[in-house]
Image 1 (cartoon, rainbow, N blue to C red):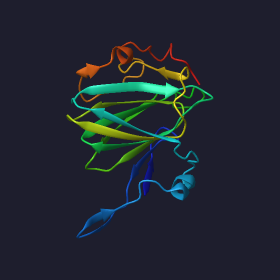
Image 2: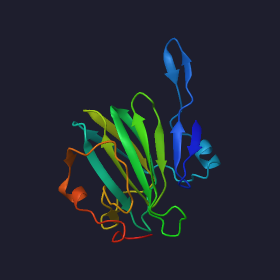
Image 3: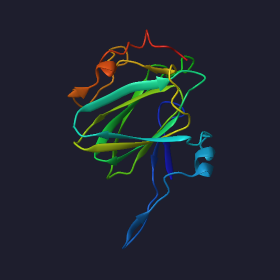
Image 4: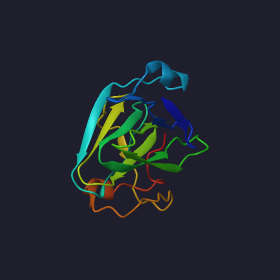
Length: 180
């Protein structure tokens, strides 16, 4: 596995090292030792799938507060997404900063999202599925979110969403979001 650390400490773009032959390829999508070598000691405790029939569906920006922080390993298994994370760790030098990564079924790329990072995405194609491996269970009452288009963060989405839940549309901006 090829780990590329992003400008946000602890967040990695992960590409699979493919062993290819005439049958196709084989690659590891998870290896406890390789993750540990990069300081990641949060094995998955839960796996979830998001199915999105319409291009332009936006989900986010979600996170859980302490002590229920959750890291995520995100991969697009059908279609494509523009995946975005925002550092919500108040003591972090990159607090409030974001990155965006294109994850597609064809590029097999993954994004490791550390604890206390807000996470969201917009679908780039119809019929897009996203797989998450999550280090902690969902805890009602610990979920928080911030607004997808908060001007204080300035996320540069590839286009305006066409489908957004009322809940996601009305999240607070970062000044009002619960901090870590």
